[in-house]
Amino acid sequence: MVSRELKKIALERINRLMDFAERHAAERPEIAKEAILLAMRIAQKARVRIPKKYKRMFCRKCGTPFWTPNSFTVRIRDRRSTHVVIRCLKCGYIKRIPVSKKSKTIT
Ligand SMILES: [Zn+2]
Image 1 (cartoon, rainbow, N blue to C red):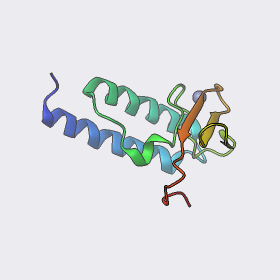
Image 2: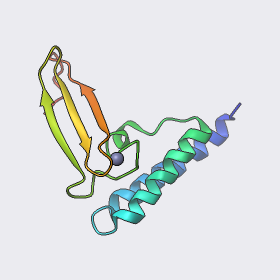
Image 3: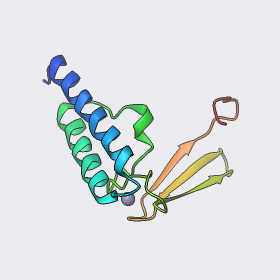
Image 4: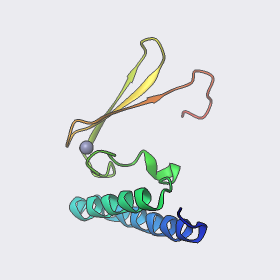
């Protein structure tokens, strides 16, 4: 059982690490990746979720930050249901995000 206080601390650390990764991804991708991997480990241990705004910004398999140029490709597939396909160019991990046709949030 992870206490609520610990989760709060973990989330703060994750936010700080992700913020750090975002700022350094372009010029120092290796350091950004380390920060992301650390944030992922903290999230796992404390059983908290990575905040939504950061969730799609890195590869969950190898930790490569997608803020780094040439780190991923995006495709839109329209078979059966529309979904966005994000592919990590470092490890080949493929992430599919379903897109609701009624959704107006996609810009
Ligand atoms: Zn990857």
